[in-house]
Length: 168
Image (cartoon, rainbow, N blue to C red; front, side):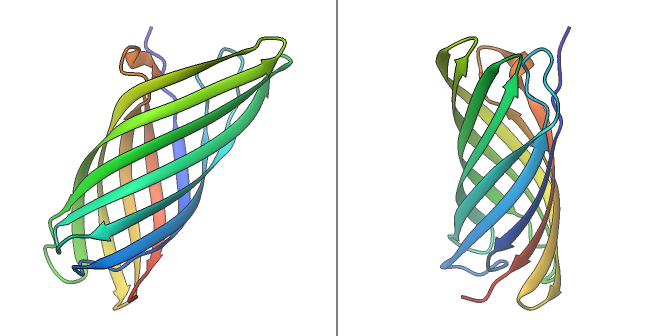
């Protein structure tokens, strides 16, 4: 049976909306349910940086970290996701986007069990940014992350809500 793990993200993003040559940075916290049997929802902290190549193409790098315990074993999970996003920029205030990325995820654990795992996978995203002012906006999106391409059951949808400020 396929097991889906849900992840909710609320983050603060510092970014320029649809401005070529601008850098953006962000911080966030997520709540997700790890794939291990008996797990419960746990926070994941993340940060990202990105660069507007032009008003449509935005490469980015996101790094997350979560630590959780299950049955006397402590797990550490760190996904790293380089991604390229295409912004459709329908109007100055309405910016839908879609993106693809690769995932490198490192998981290590200690306690009753010990070990580590390196995983390679992929991620897809779609969403919408809406500008409230020239330098502030709200984003809403959905990501689907598969941290282990050899195990599709490791995949989880990520629902993303972010606030943004820009103008650097």
